[in-house]
Image 1 (tube, helix red, strand yellow):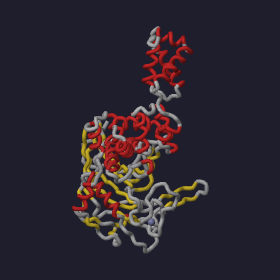
Image 2 (cartoon, rainbow, N blue to C red):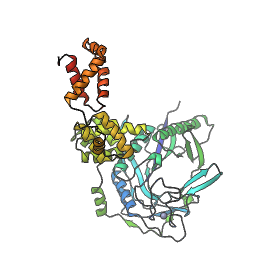
Image 3 (tube, protein in one colour):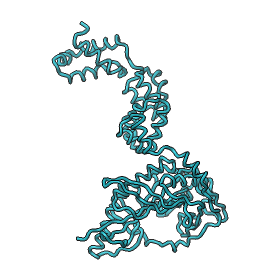
Length: 481
Ligand SMILES: [Zn+2]
């Protein structure tokens, strides 16, 4: 049997984290009611001016910097003309002649080792609207909220050979861009989307096979599954000749685990690109670029090294925190209010993420008032309350936004550390549970847990378990007799 090689290139669309749209002042925020963020400009009314969003250009420059790209001295915008109901102007403003940057590169790491992926270019463009198919009335509705939201498209060269490389690259891009503040890169909300161009050739051949493009994938898992399916479809076609491969765009159906033809792939000439005369060329001068470079936040890799080095935190915990920009921000803000990194990391990973998981939230969606969170950790760390009371208060902070100190005072939750009170509780529990006490004395350690449970309950769950255990053992060994 012949040996085949899969060749892939990626086009990744990333929504820029601006407040407003690319050419008007409408909000770019995700999740509003349909057509709430629309004005005559982004609704495509004739004669409306397009005013370029400076912040979008700055974020584009930041993306160029973190991907080691060559920034274009003077960039321009072009019109890409096509008709589709979600595109009210009849053209998309994008960059084809002088995009913001070219020739980037970034290093990925897979089981097979390190590899450099090269980028053809990154360009800035506007997003299209969204069509909503209404099954009830059998009609299609259009929502223009997303129309003209700023995007960058990151176009790689066909450097990928395996799905593992593709996933590693997307994770690297997500980390670089989210930590640089370019985008929140949430695949599930569509702020990071990926199209894969894929072809298959005989191993060793210098000629590329027929290329298909797979669209509509919203998770890394779906992307890996789509690549595996599509590569096999190409190989089967080459081997059996039963299917003729054509250059086309295909849709991935994650539920069925299959790709389907959407349309034949257009060529650049189909779009009649031409320079947009309304937007003047933009000079990206060195001083501006340096200003953006010096203001770039700490990348995940540097933060990881600082956490494991200077802060002395375990690698596994540091990897979890720096795996998400959101968790990393929570860590920084909490640490700013209470300077015990080990406890802060511990509470984020063990308690906060457990609650988030229970609410079906991921690492990127969990949120907490970091000042209150820090105060709570301090109360537990300083033994004002015990940890199990602390966990309950964390729930209250997340649900009702309670102030931990006030809540402890109002509900009398302070740690019981009065030895006299604990001793009396121990005596009562021992006299009521003589059998268990005798078992412990006879060497049955399991019975200690039973007695501890009774004791903690009788002390309202507020005592310091370490101290209670100490007093219990003191009385069990007859210390008090
Ligand atoms: Zn608008």
